[in-house]
Image (cartoon, rainbow over all chains, first blue to last red; front, side, top):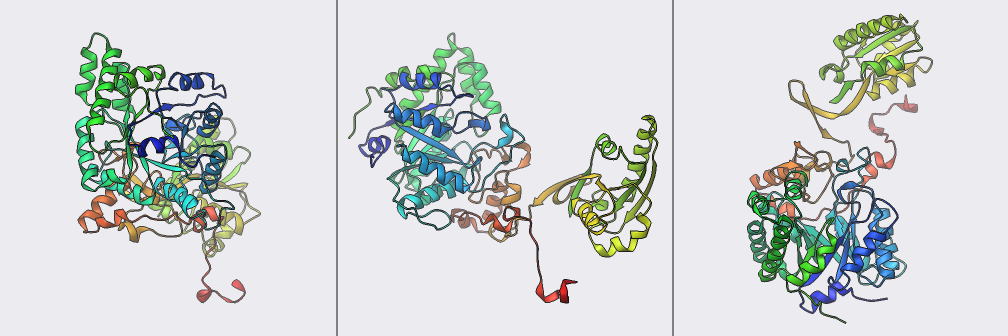
Length: 307
Length: 226
């Protein structure tokens, strides 16, 4: 078994990392998901797989991760605290490590009343910070949350967290990242960036606290396909800021898809210039086939090889 | 206090459908204060039910009474004799009252007339809000009087999630983000440093997750537990 994830090696070698998001389907047929994964195989360093995103039932993140590992692709397994208690979270982590998953992104998860099972019981036994710490304690100290010991050491998993510079209270958001780092986060993925000014202000705070030297930060980028998509994210997706100026820019363009794509590429280029940003996470939701073009046009292709 | 809401009349009617002599029994404490199950609501419920039964061609004899508290044997015993001669009692108490009545008077049929909603307080006339989940291990000392377990939709212990925007919770624009409130309060009190302290996983065994709870005070207990 590998001792270090490809993603971690990429960061450690000083490369600007690229990950792509895969959203599992509402069925056990993974043909389309795996097809998307193949399309971006040479363009991303790892695949981030969502865990019942927006509280909609889908194939599990771990299920897709197993399929990727079989195909020689590296997953970043998302784990939310919404659906599983500490017993299941820890058990699933062990299960995923057993087939070779090494990157785990620990997050709270959208509340259950957003999705297609609004009558569900929201678990939230651990919160995201506690989950990060639980994974770290399993790996570094060989202990479970309850204090019992693992029978064998956990391979070196790479612990991720999320950060949202577009949530409030804004002045607390860098401190919140500091807390997650203290809990054990080693890489962080941000909410989709559409308001670059606010993102840069947040990065200033991050640098003031020296956090960019303690954690690998991946900016979240989503290409906008249409005015409708922009409006939807502006009004319906929690924790997002889509500036009106951007909506108008896309609205005013002759080729709206192309304009959305241009903005995403501009964003990635700008991210590469910001001190303390170590990579990009591309969330091309329902537009996965565009990922190779984005990576190429952002000057991030070919992907470097690391050992 | 315990806050409740009366069940829809149609549901009450369905529960009482097999019975002819019915007592609608109000409760004089919490649910009287929250205007859900006191004397007035018992009278309203009884007359509405009578109309409904008449319309359905299945007339019923419906009386009303109100007990001081349906959640204590003492008060149940006081009024016990007045509860005879009914096929069923529609209790307008909270779930605690309905079950205490059932336990004390097992020969009687007690039906719930309310949905017990939460422990909370009146925010303004006609509006009540939840602020305690009864987790059995009060955290208010950490957060200076604002409960993250109850008032954060995700019961987070370590700060606001990414869904907090403009002081509101991602679940609804009508819900305040508890962690925004806690943050502001700690700032005002000069205690913002507390936000950086990692709170370990909560012991939920003190809450309902540990199974139904019983609280024992040996110092005030009578011999034989009576």
